[in-house]
Length: 365
Image (cartoon, rainbow, N blue to C red; front, side):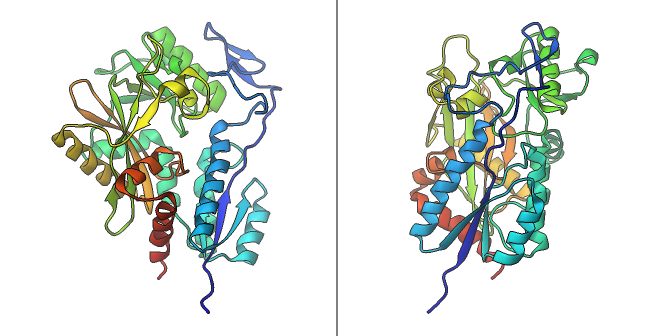
């Protein structure tokens, strides 16, 4: 009798922070000691201070995937990756799964360390789902990705990177409104309605906030006021571009910016969350749809995505698509946008997970 393929789901549980010694940006833009002023109000009273809600999403994602893998007949286990690297080494050495379903997105809230975990799998020669260390690290360096896209003729919003709020000089072509983001984060971390700025004072305030809260440079982009599109891609040798999904902002209050903020992604019950709904397929003119799909596939291959990924676009009022970012490990839980696109293509959730596993196993067969 053939042995069942053993798949270990590796993920990271949320890390609880403390309020002591942290800094925040006050309403007048000054750096002060104390608990940070959150860009959003935490709704759930059982969410401890310092927990990134996007990490809680990873736990929900793990549960969905475990259920799907079990339904497909795989022997499934889970392992929480934390800062104790010796535990991970022992697990990889002793357990030796046939495949790792990699959901690790950070170590102790440090997103850039996710590439190191994938590097550990490589050292132990254990196959795993998703992108390799180089693609993961590259994708988290948003300014670098934009430079790569520009060098390959891919349209992306103009940008600058600022390390010091007091020495901001906008180069030609950079005009307000602008949007300010952390340079090395994902999952809309650090993005709120205040991220869209209209003056130098507002810009300085947000750059200070990024440095105080995330200890990294601020990526400042030309704000494209238009539609937001998400393009999911699955597979390797002949990647499939799934139906294009769109985020609708019709439920937002008047005056709120049409962006996918941290609240819109993760904070159930807020105006941002309830007012931004995904629809698939997006209704687009044929020429624009073709350009978006072709560009998404080009981006997927450009930074070395594997098995699955998502490319996010903004569509200007005149119908010009701009790539915002390439996400090599997007949320693939049952209710996420990636699954929405795959279901529009005709796949069930277990079939989505099965295709990702098959793509990963093809690399070792």
